[in-house]
Amino acid sequence: MKLAVIGYPIRHSKSPFMHNIWLDELNIEGVYEAIEVSPDRLAQQIQTFKENHYKGFNVTIPHKEHVIQYLDEIDETAAILGAVNTVVINNGKCTGYNTDGDGFLQSLLLKRTAEEIRKSAILVIGAGGAAKGITGALRAFGADQISVANRSPEKAERLIKTLGLKSGLNLTEAQNRLYDYDIVINTTSVGMYPDTENLPLDSSSMKKGALAADIIYNPLSTQFLIKAESAGAEALNGIGMFVFQGSLAFQKWTSKEPDAAGMMAKMTDKMN
Ligand code: ATR
Image 1 (cartoon, rainbow, N blue to C red):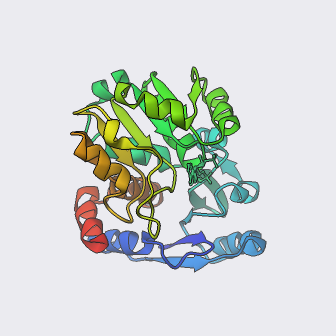
Image 2 (tube, protein in one colour; image 1 turned 135 degrees about the vertical axis):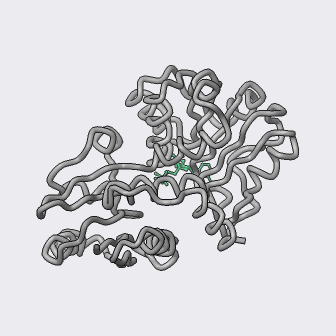
């Protein structure tokens, strides 16, 4: 089975490490490669995948939105988000999915029960592609107390309208009300290597026992998580989201469920 991830650049992707271990563990003959594809070669690359009988591929920055025009079908979630991270090829037909939001949700379920998630006051920081996927998945799961805080308010307003949420906040308002939230999620890239000293807002005013979640996994502990923990909050790093979005993609290609827990341990070791 031939699989791949396309992006530009792509050399830092950890996806080949993860998927090749899973292929091996499940005795599936195949290989998952990272292929650097510049935007002007996207259409051509997809044609090559079809001609060479690839089973599917992952899509990362900067192709998640542009890839849609070259696909034959996209599922409802990906259509609403306007972004695809997983493509399945069946008899030459490409179908696009987005597993990022559900991947995050599955990792959140390691820390909170479904019932707790549904009744939590949730703050999402950021309003980009990642925020859209995560907020959409939380809404679909039945969480209805979700606020979005973003640096530029227009973008937050757009997300709020798309998902039918009540209102947005600017970062100062979010900072002032941080204590009111049970779950605070950083979906921005603020704090990611190499600018590891930055944080999207000062999480040291979070409530004790609340949960701080970051989608970043390099470093494993961002300043956002470290400060939240200093206030007595729990921390969830981005390893779980990365592994579960991959696991959901892997299941679409192979119809087999890979070992996500084992992979979280392996990825954590790798990042340490
Ligand atoms: P992705 O698809 O990975 O979510 P994106 O669409 O570029 O990436 O979105 C990045 C998000 O991080 C945005 O919400 C962005 O805020 P703006 O809408 O104001 O641009 C947010 N972000 C990026 N850098 C930031 C910073 N230094 N401080 C606060 N927010 C930041």
